[in-house]
Length: 74
Image 1 (cartoon, helix red, strand yellow):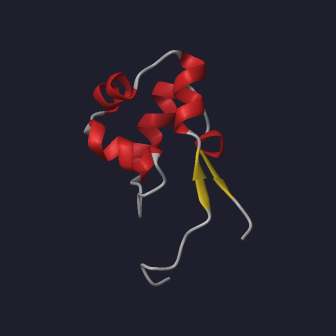
Image 2: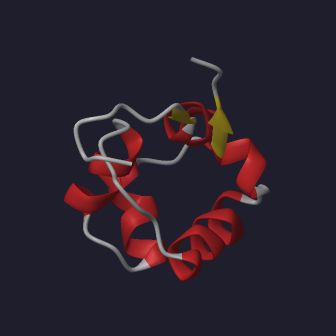
C-alpha cells in the first residue's frame, strides 16, 4: 500500500483510557513507550504497531486487540 493511501483502521484508545480513568501519560509509562508515540497511535497517524507494544497495551488496559483496533469498510 503506498504511504499516501489512507488506511481504514480505527484506534479506540481514547475510549479505553476514559473507561479506565487512565491518562495517556500514565499508560505510556506503564507500557514503556513515549507519550508522543502513544499519541500518534491514538490519533490514527501510526503506520505500524509492534506486537510487543500491542500486547503491553492490552495487558495494561485489560482488553483484547479487537477492543483497541477495528477495521472500517471504506
